[in-house]
Length: 288
Image (cartoon, rainbow, N blue to C red; front, side, top):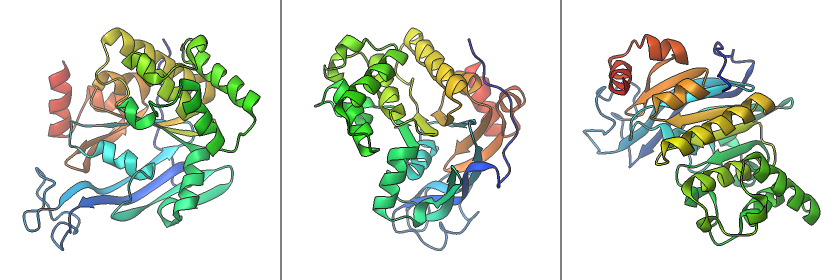
């Protein structure tokens, strides 16, 4: 089994993704909840206006080819954070800079068409719920074809070849590429999602609880496939999970989130072996 390699946080100038002061507020918001440090540490709900601060002033950097874990319980804001970066919803405040192939993109300053183009070529997302990442009314090959068409590939034969190659790499039977995803098991649907996300060879993948709800044997197979992809292709990944085993296996560095805030950050092995924040200590203890 391939293991994740240790690495230090990238410098701002070397970072593929540079995120600063990113926030997402659900509700009107007020001077209390929009002021950094104004909320109590054990809540993300403003007592004055009842707004929910799902992501609260988050900053981090991601290096080229790095695998970063974002760990926390349900409601910690970790999934909302990656949805912001994938343009599934807009942030309330903050900035994110994406660098690739000598180009610099200020993500939230782009218009909608520019965001779509960037996402279609450079980002991939695998959701916990396959119905968010796949069109169940289309065939498996149709789902992959859509992704390739959006990134500029329009040759039918090339699309079919690419779909077959991607599915074979993910151990999905190629002879079933023209059936609908609903005929597959949950584990196979996740493999199809990964194949679709990878179709245009994006340099950055977001993985949101990709093994949650699957049985242990299926989880292990999917995690091994993800490790192989990262090892062979050096894709950068942001891995969202509540599972300490997933964090330990896949990631080099980890952010721990609680109530929309980062409460601890560092090398994954150090966080899991010697957690400093009481919340992280409780997470690690509960998994023993």
